[in-house]
Amino acid sequence: MVLLVAVSFVGADLQYGEVTYDVELRDEVTVTVATQEDDPLGQQVVLGTATATNTFAFREPVAFPDLRVCVYSPGRMADRGVFYDDGSSPFHRSVGGYGTLTTNVTIGLSGEEATVLRGTLPVERAESCPSEREEPGLVVVAPQAMGE
Image (cartoon, rainbow, N blue to C red; front, side):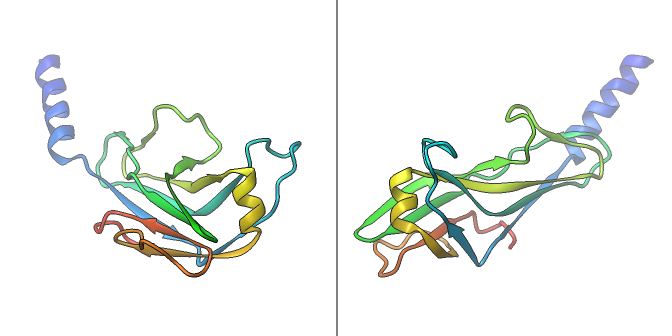
């Protein structure tokens, strides 16, 4: 009997469990020049937040979407991924039944990039990165199904 109940819960979890994702980006970010004491590799810049919402009663694993960011500085473009940082362990994450998990959407800039890009930069969203851009800025490429 216990096995039958367990199988029905697993079946319900597989059939109905769904986590939806929403990304809200800032309109602009401020880049400052980091000192070696702050971060010898450069600086982390928070672009916005991502929220995972569990629409089912059981705890579900969270797999935030693979966002790409194109970093435009004078005469150069670098493409990199984001990382999700909520101050907790970077390992396995999950969200409880009918719960939400909100985390920062962050990129890392090298010390050289932070020096060149120092100041306020616009953050834009696009389906792909433009091949070139006149002004420095950040373009976030997200799956079309993602909300803002």
